[in-house]
Image (cartoon, rainbow, N blue to C red):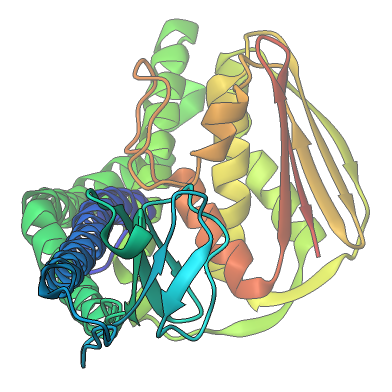
Length: 386
């Protein structure tokens, strides 16, 4: 039992895991994106520096040609780039480029897989005021390897996060296991004294007792029944997964009447009135012990948390059981978390906070739907439908 994950632990694992993964993935994404843009920016500046170097080469060649004072000039050509020269009015003088440049607003730009650099020169060699350099754009930084590395990192992070969460939650598991073992040991210790007390109470001759003694005996019996009911819950909780199912066609009407009688003394102590609207011969196929635990937990909660001198309404139809009290009620948040094992909202009342956990396990097993309606200081209405 200690190795199972309870709903509270599952929520904690999911919360911690999601928080860790989201923050880690955000950090990884930021780092890889920063690296990608850094590489892109570096390539941009490298490309720009290369074009400026080529522009200087062209200017140097033009300067040499200008100094030759020859009758014939051969415009310089280069293996790595193409070029063109324009006059002060931005009219083409000569070009080895495939395209003509019309826009001189940008010093550096790319177009059709080519990079261009426009530079002004002085003095005006051969009447040229501007040089234009054209080269094939260098291969843009390939993000494929970066994406692959990011995916490997993310997968590794997810795997390690599970191990980290398990390490973080180990103390929680140990505490739950310790609590389970404590409850198990306590349950075994309760069995004998509870049976002895109840057996001796039944053998006492009430006719020979005065009124004061009868009241004391009644209180002892009620307390014993409360402990017995708690004991039955603990036994179910600890041994349910080990016991075999004995499903049979049960007369729910008869069982409900029996459980009302069982809790009559407890209800009488708070001056509660049972208002019964029980349809006779309502049948449901289930394990008797589980059906009794289901009814007992809802009914005992109604008795425990309702106000004194109020009514508890019990309605049974062919496909519905409803138990309604006039107690302190619950908030929406409490209803949301009511099925968590060991969750107690009222520390003034006894118990281990396992009642609704048992209810949930039984209704899930038999496909029963549950509806809980509650208002603070007005009461709670629990409806089972099948």
